[in-house]
Every structure is written in structure tokens, then in C-alpha cells.
Amino acid sequence: MFFSLKSKHKISIFLSICLILSTLFYDIYLCANISSFSYVDPNQVVEYVEYEENAFPYEETILEKSDRYARAVENYKYIFPKATTSIILVPTTKSDDSGPRYRTILINQKKLIDDIYTHISDKINKINIFDTLVEHIDENIYFKYDHHWTAMGAYYAYVEFCKSNNITPIRLDKLKKVLINSKWQGSIYNSTKDDRIKYATDEVYCYLPRKKHTMTYMDSNDYGTYHRDSCVFTDLNGYTAFLGGDNPYTVIEVEDNPKDKCILVIKDSYGNALIPFLCEHYGSIVVIDPRFASEGFVETLKSISNVTDVLICSAVYQVEVGKYVGQMENIIKNDIKKQTKLISAGVDLDKIYISTKSNINK
Image 1 (cartoon, helix red, strand yellow):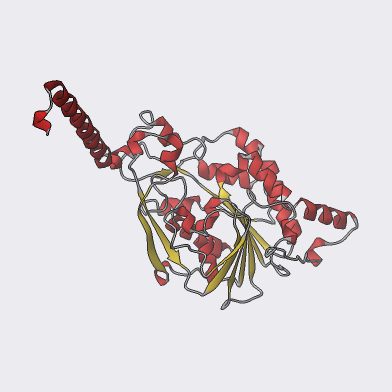
Image 2 (image 1 turned 45 degrees about the vertical axis):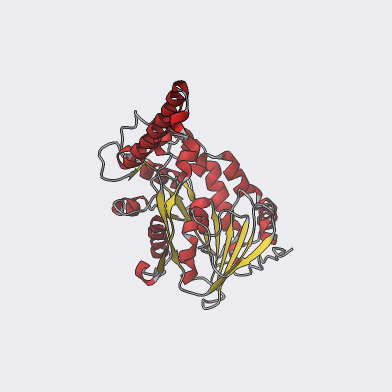
């Protein structure tokens, strides 16, 4: 059939085939050179390397916003005065322009986190995980092409949380490691649309909690309530495998752990990968994402009468995101008003405890 066509048609078809083949070979070339692309000079790939939403320089303007953030953190201590309240600010990453060995944490974030912590009361347990992550930087602690850390990175933060709270962390080799996806395209390409990483992928691993547990959560899409037998969704193929993604309210119950051990976690998406490790220690884990939760969450939670721990865990950049800090404030606004009245009446908050009621199943 091809040979029966006129010459101009043959030329047209030939050129089309050449175009297809050249595109195919270029795509193959891109894939073959992804590893070197990961470590190019930042001046060559500004969009990817800077990724400004999640990697920013150390600036005084960030610290100017730390006072408001500090007040928001300390308000949780007011609501749960007998609980040990801890905070973990998670460093973000960028490519290392000094050589091709590995990706590195932004060099100035340790000082940034320490400076933010100076704005927060010493009643809060302030955990700087920067040095620990640097010690393990040769390991796969951050995704290459997504802005989150991996389960491995979250594990090292969990270990630091345990150390600071006199808890013995579970050894990683005691947990089952599961490959969720061997070719996951993370957020970096979707954010930059840079063709040089169009085919760049990461492997997503999860570590399954060894203790039997159940999870009840309110979905952020339809606000329906759902139940699962695990807080790790092995049927999902990306970062959403941790807790099923970001949802307003989540309650994890671990039947073999003490019922009087309850931790409340206030988090953004970085907290998702850390929370499954807490199943080793707490009978109840209540998780709130301020970005989706509504005002007055204390009355919405599952009957917390004895919160023993509070953990606030988010990426460090949330400190300067006014909307996020505002939501941290708003979801406890009614409860803070109650506490203010108690203080004005001369009540010692250290001698009382706020009980809560639940309508999570409504």
C-alpha cells in the first residue's frame, strides 16, 4: 500500500515517522539522564531546584510571623494543660549544587527552626530534627521528585520524638516494609511542568504497624465517615498511602496498647508518614489537619477525656503561611474563649482537664 502512494504522500509519511521516532528517542534520552538532572547547577533549572513553595531562603520576614505561630502552638497547651506538648518543624529539601552524591537539606533551616523555637514557650517540648536528618542524608529520607519526606525520613523524626518523651522507639527492622509504587511521579513535575523531569519517578515504601488497629476518618472530599483496618493504605500508590491522604479528622485505635495513652496530632501532610509509627505506643491517636477541620474541633473528636500527649508536626514553611496558622487558631477558637474565662475567674488550668464529646459519626 505504501509503495502505491504518490511521491509527495510518501515524503509526508516518512517525515511523520521521523518526527515520531525523534520524539521517542528524545524521551528515552530524558529518562536516561534524569539522575544527572537531579544534581545540575541551580542556575540551569531554577524552577525545579528552588520550588519556592517549599524551599525558601532564611529571611527575617519568616521570624516576624513566628510570634503568631508560637501563640497558636501554645494555645493547645492551654486546652490540654496536663498533656506533654511537642512540636516538630520538618526541614524541606532541594538539590545539592556541590556535587552529584546526594540531595541535601537546605543549609540554613537548622538556624531557622531554632530561631522559630525561641518564640515558643519552654512549656512546649521543641524538637529540632535537622541534625538527625543530616546524619542520614545518604539514605532515602526524601523523595527526589516530590516535596515530601519518605517513610524513612519520618521514622527518624519519630525516633527523636520518642527520645524526647522517654519512649522506646520500635526498631525499623521489626516492621514489615512494603513497596507501594516503584514508578511514582510526585508533585515536582506537576508544579513546574518541566519536561526534563516529565518521566522522573520515585519508589514509595511504607512500613506497616505491627499492632492490630482500626482507623476511622472523615474524608476531606465528601465529609463522609469511613472505617479501615489499617492506617496505611496499601491499595493507594503514592504519598496518600499514609492515612489515605489529608483528612479533617482521623481516629486510630490500637487495642493492645494502654487505653489511657492518647496522643493528639495537629499536622499538615508531612505528619502523615510519621503517624503510623505511633501505633506502637498509644491506645488512641487522634489526628487533625487544620487545613480541612472546622471550628470547635474539641467537641467533634472521639470522646477524649485523657489526652496524654500533643504533637504538632508540619513543614517549617507553614510558619509563614497565614492561612494555615489561622486555621490552627480557628479550630480551637471556642475552646480558647472558654479557657480565657476560666483564667479570668482565677482557675488554675494545671488542675483541670477539658473533657470532649464526639459527633464524628454523624
